[in-house]
Length: 39
Image 1 (tube, helix red, strand yellow):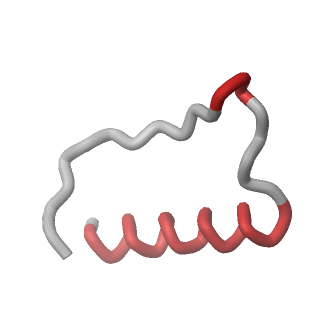
Image 2 (tube, rainbow, N blue to C red):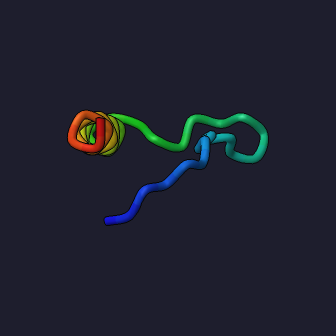
């Protein structure tokens, strides 16, 4: 891993929700754990 200093924004075309159900939960959990790990 390396230090990423970019602000990531999820904005799909037409503002449709692309992350739903189980996939949403898994992605959210992984991003949160990565953020906690990196501080």
